[in-house]
Length: 308
Image (cartoon, rainbow, N blue to C red; front, side, top):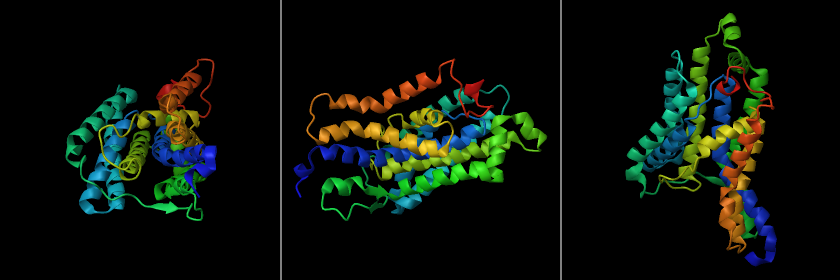
């Protein structure tokens, strides 16, 4: 069957495939930030962690010949960034938002410095599962070619949703995020819980970065992120700190990011590039809607900086 036979159906198929591809980094970064913010800390440095994770994953995958080793290295690098961020934030009169911005600039700069040698070499790609192999239509095959990390992200979202409600560790993170005084009364150390939660969030952000460089777009360059780490923070607020909500919101952001290429694929040659700005417009709209003084941030942890 020829490509033209499906006509305008290629647009929703392209948006579906694009939503799956583009949403994966959003999903991992937002799930990581959900863990961090549920403990009562906001991490605006995830953009730097994402970019450094992309560089680390690509470099290690190239040198080792294994994309999965690259993913593990990216997770380790992200957790180190998270530990460093959490360690600094435990000191008195330190603002976690300001530190996050500094960590973002530090991570991006460090990635650009060490990553120059890996712009040209080709690293092995992460595998994908061809769920569309049953079809002879190229657009269906492309849309349903799903990366393994996307499936892992779905399973992780479900697990975190369950864990926050049904496990002791989930309860500890929620108590610390809602009230440091209550946590101390229970014999918990809020600084330690937030430190480990920030490290876990950084590890997931690093995995999101590895996906960017090892699958889509599948190369390392200095403009690889386009602000996805920062947008993921807005995504967490939009999802009301619910891991399942993060999955739905990530698909929404991914679909918005795929709108421009989908229109281009059906021959729209004028104005389609304006739709490339859709994720940024969506982020701005979410921030305006959630920042209104007349609206309550339902579900927000009590110790989070944006609630004070």
